Amino acid sequence: MVKREKSVALLGLRARPSNLIAFPPDYFRFGLQPAKTFTMNKDRLLSRDVVVTQIPSGDKHTLFAGAKVFIHQVLGGTYTVQGDTGLYRIDAKDADAIGEQATDQSVEAATLADGAPDPEALWNQLRKVYDPEIPVNIVDLGLVYSLDVTSAEAGYHADVAMTLTAPGCGMGPAIAEDAKGKLLLVPGLASAEVRIVWEPTWNQSMISEEGKMKLGLI
Image (tube, rainbow, N blue to C red; front, side, top):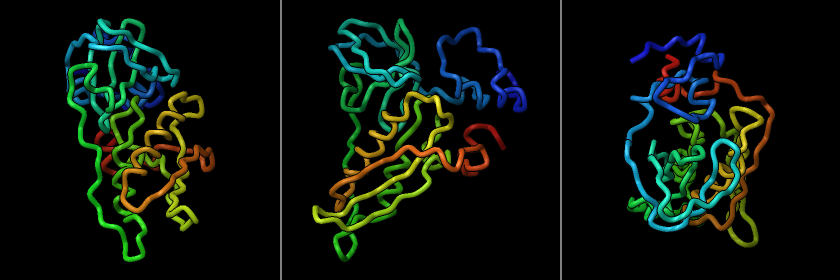
């Protein structure tokens, strides 16, 4: 395994490993090593058409039945796959298209005495959300700035303010939608909004100690 050169990798100057193609910039910016990042190595043929999210643009595309993909990793129940034209994210609900069994997304958590959702359950759900370019959840990455729950006429509402590691990341809307969907699985929550904000500017000091360990920063 190639030794990490942190000062170089963090500047995005690391050369791509010769056996990898089309990997997103953040993978190399954090100096990640393939053996530690990717836990699955599986070639699959799609059993049906499936709508996917291109990485890192965030654009929606359709991959057709019979297309060959290579599963790189599973993050928060979603699949990062390599196709003939680049990297894509396949949602958990479409796991059957690549021969995988969708994981149970239900949340077992009691509501508070007033019927409000358990705050810890909400945070735990956000810890299941990932930027598909980085194998650390958005909470440990320091991307979630606030989570507020208020009582509304239709029930309890969660408002989340989060950011991205870079303003040009096209995956922002997809990540926010994933976070919203996971929050709405928590008992007691009727609605949710996840907003992308840019102040304060994110920096690596916001990453948790656990996140830094996974990224090899400490």
